[in-house]
Image (tube, rainbow, N blue to C red; front, side):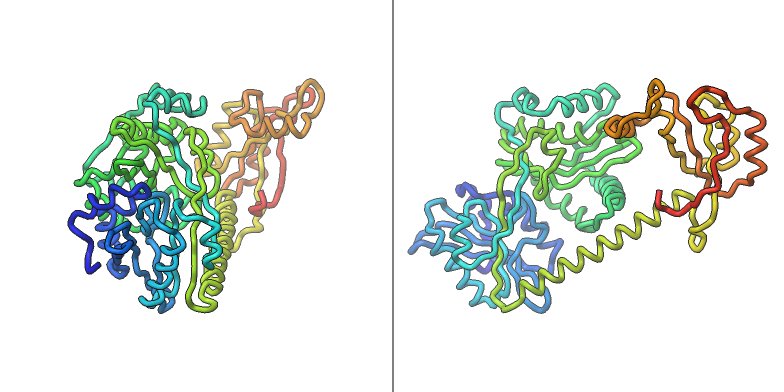
Amino acid sequence: MPKRPHDWDQQIRRFPNKNFGHESAWLDYLGSAYPRNPIEYFEIRDATRVVGYFCMARVKKYRFSLYRSPLAGAGRCLGLVVEPHVDQSELVRGLVELCKSNRIAHLEISNNWLDERLMRRMGFRVLPNVVHVCRLEGGERAVWARMQSRCRARIRKAEKNGLVAETTDDPGIVEVFYSQFTRVMERKHLPVPYSLTMARAMFRHLVPVDKLFAIRVKYRDRVIATGLYLHDDRALYYLDAGYDEDYLHLSPNELLHWTAMKLAIVRGIRSFQIGIGSPSRFTQKLGGDELPCPVYRKSFVPLLETVQTGYVVGRRMVHAVGRQLRTAWTTASGNGVSRGAASRTQWLVVVQSSQPELYKLLRGQVGDAAQVIIDRRQGERRRGRTASPPERRRRNRRLPDPSPLAAVYSPKTPVEEADIESVSRQYPPSSARGDRPRGELVGPVSSAPAG
């Protein structure tokens, strides 16, 4: 077709496998966000009757044209929307001929309606994948009951702590969301998938037509979490969220998702598609299930897919090596190591937690930026015996431990041995049986980032 019909949304509504990726609002956003990847539309006819449509973005890669959806994900895949009785073998054969006639080098589609065995026989490579879905049938009470108890407890905790979640159509939320979202991706050492300009374009195209919930969570008039949720008349789709890590203990993320789910329930939306890919602990807490959502690929140029796979694997290896290097440098910086001085010797001072005066004195000497490490060796002593490995692991997961422990301070700036000894003389060691003396000097030790 030369362009998308003006009544496109009304025409595709009758097909059961229609998703948000086929909506005009989303297609308009893709056209503005990816102007170099035009979306092409095709009718699927059985004799003279229209039985479906095929829309796909033409992407340029390695001087080849590919049919695949940009920002492909749960509910945001383009592709086929057809009547369920259509013969799949004839349809797929027609798609292959279409790609060859249009000089398409690679086809990538994802649709639960397609038969996996048939696609394999037609020469497609099948990539297993799952989509995380929460059912929203039965009203708020039924959805609440399907959640895990710890998720419900966190939502109650957020409300008890005074957190307030609200929707907004203020464009200023995009800047707040993007700032929080990029910080989350940086902490996870993951690339940011889109720019601030694209986020603004998404808000501009979807909010006026009521296809996007922009939700923010406030704590004492401060926005501590934001989330964007796409939706149509059939499903709610989680796009992305950001949060302030300083307020993560207040459980804003659970409240954020629950607010979006309640909005969808009121509108009669029957499912919440949280994401795709590997198993998600967050999905399980919300009562979600994993449904198969395979991706089908077929290349029409010899060795093209092999080259593409090698490129993806190489890029992942580079990202993994870079992430390890960044983690090592972050650890070294946290331990007071500067460039070219990774082997500098530091002193560690063991101070009993019941000595606030000595703690204040040492903290003032090494500065607020010094890393504080909990020495759990004394906490493992229980009635004259050493804790077993399982007990040790259980105790190490608790922060802070209720039992009296010693705190080990690793100063970023070197501290003279004489200064530490003078402090220790002011606070003589304790003679408590089985405990390390208070104010005892432990060092020197290496400050390498090994831990």
